Image (tube, rainbow, N blue to C red; front, side, top):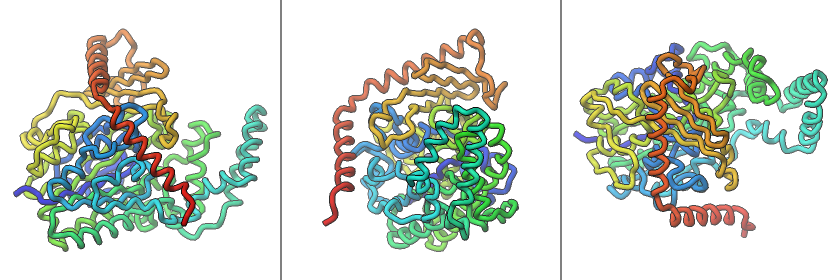
Length: 491
Ligand SMILES: [Zn+2]
């Protein structure tokens, strides 16, 4: 029997090596681990782009993020996507996104959903905006100016940085709980709203997409989740200190490293909270008697770095495994799941594979292809995964979107990273160097380098054949309409 409904859960910043079903030793995902036993588990799922704003076009519309040009971010107006296609096929559609502005109406994500809630209009935990509030005050601006000047003062400047940081910690508002510090709605709030919606539409077939932000920095997990992973008790002010310290730009890796484990413990606690809410989601779907007719997909938009290569968070251009490899679990009722091939599976192929599982045709606009047959036959596939990005860190600014391209070609063993801005080309052998500590010298593995470069060339040429002028114009006018509607005076 083919599933009648589809639930897609995406988690921000969740790396593949931090879930139990892909080998993580800390007990952060006991529920998902049990679900994995009856699911297809993809050990090497690779995103289509990094970070959020380059990842979702591949997940939702099976399209490379830069295929229509760098200036076009998100889904284009009326783009054929998983939700639009399912809606057209008679599904009720809804999305609940935990206040990530890059997955909002401005970037086209509201289209095709009967119900779309991005939680951006809600006043989130006031104290959680501690950093941004601080950064806007006159005193903060003055202090930052002094800080910049003090950089030229050698040890005195370093001392000033340290004193200023400690002063900010003492001067910040007192905090009562970890919950009050969190700048995003947590997974329980998103799941609550989603379940309310499912209750209102079942037994009609539905497509439900949830995007959870819990493991996104700053890391403020629910205390219950921290206890569940056996973490050291952490007070709200300590958690704020850890996050502030981790966010410092004036410290080198060595000093940051001293608190790395404590920060990762907070990150892991957030993952456990996601797992607990996934258990509640599935439990309620069972209660509503829709679980036996629903497929469920669990994945992430990209991972997170914890100084493995000197960086933190999820800056777009490093393309390291901790950023591009994500968990992917697909549970389809009546199908006995298993671990699929270890070949890299691109998110680009996810939507076609899911449509195949739902017994629906794949729209010709999709750039990916279905691997549903290969999954069921336990076969592999030969094409590498391609990851696209640019060095843009603020797509809200149209001029920033034109930052230099970064391209990654990842096959089962090798990974080629091309940074077009500085002309850098790096080839890694993931078998002999799984941590990607040293790119291969230019005269080693020349045939591999040539093969992956050729693949990159064909990929870029393919993108140039897409005529995106019409889409570009419509996408720009959509953004302008949204900006203008926000700046219009209230009646
Ligand atoms: Zn993200």
